[in-house]
Amino acid sequence: MDQSNEIKKLSAEEYALKADTEIAGMLRGGRYSELLDAISDLGKYTVRNVALIKEQYPDATNVTLMRQWNYRKRSILAGAKAIKILAPVFEKVDSADGGKGQKEKLAGYKINFVFDISQTRGEINPDMRLDSKITPTELDVFYESIQEAITGMSNGYGFSFVADNNLIDHNNKVINLKAGQSREDTLRAMIYGVACANIEGRQIENGIEISQGREMFNEIEQTAVAHIASKRLGLDGYKLKEIDFSEFDEESITKFSNNLNNIRSLSQRIINRVESCVIEMQSANNSAQENSDNELDEAFGHAIKPQKDMALQQGAEM
Image (tube, rainbow, N blue to C red; front, top):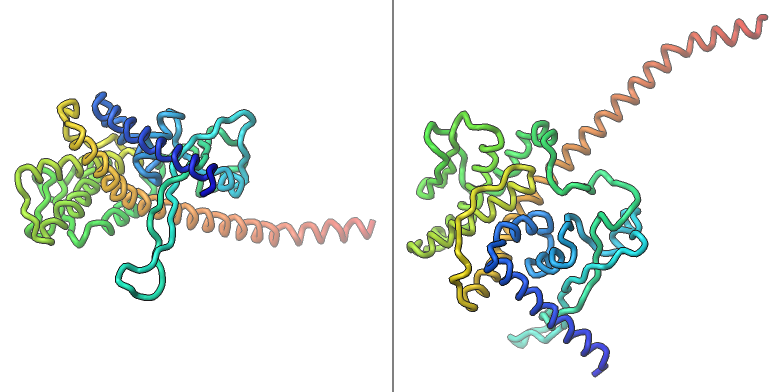
């Protein structure tokens, strides 16, 4: 075996351990909400990588590989220090059931190097945000489209406006929203309802008994998803279920850390759906504006052309 590859693999595994230690330290150190805020900004990466990125570059908001920045016509600033993250390494193995073909199996990790957008310079593309959050203007202009995008994640649950508080009716698969509340509160309630429909709702569908302990754990997950997605959409974070991680043993910390990736996955799916909707609407608006400008230019051009022709004719006669 090539010794250099073995060293790289070992250092990557050590880096994975470093990530796990960082996550545990954040949880036990009362930095749970800080970790969720980081997931809100960097949710396309695993929780391990989010922790590693934040440990090396606390202000990171938009991180990717150098070649991806180059593709977006941005270059790395001189002297910028790369951020180390973990990338999975797969190997092909024969099918366990003796069938034909091979499948990929996780073989380990390697270290990749990424940079934050603040470490780059160059063009700003329409689909690339300096600020990862949706702006208040976008929230106002695209409010109905954002509502529709969130609704599409509801796992078959409907939405209803009621006089009482926001409540989830699992029996009738309805997410009740309080009528008359602000747009921001409505969106937050919708996101929380979607989290409930996808976490507790799916458990009920699968016949899983919702014990008191599981109900409390579901509440932790659901408020975390609502917090992460709400923050990314430029809203105030959802009120989190308070947890004292200082009382957790190693096994409980590891279990919760692993479950953070499920929280990250669901919140990221909500974020991706809404952001795709906003970018699509922005693109449609920009195209409409360009067409309108072209029509105005064309109309203006037709209006002044006779005047230009007359001026040229008068000049020729002089």
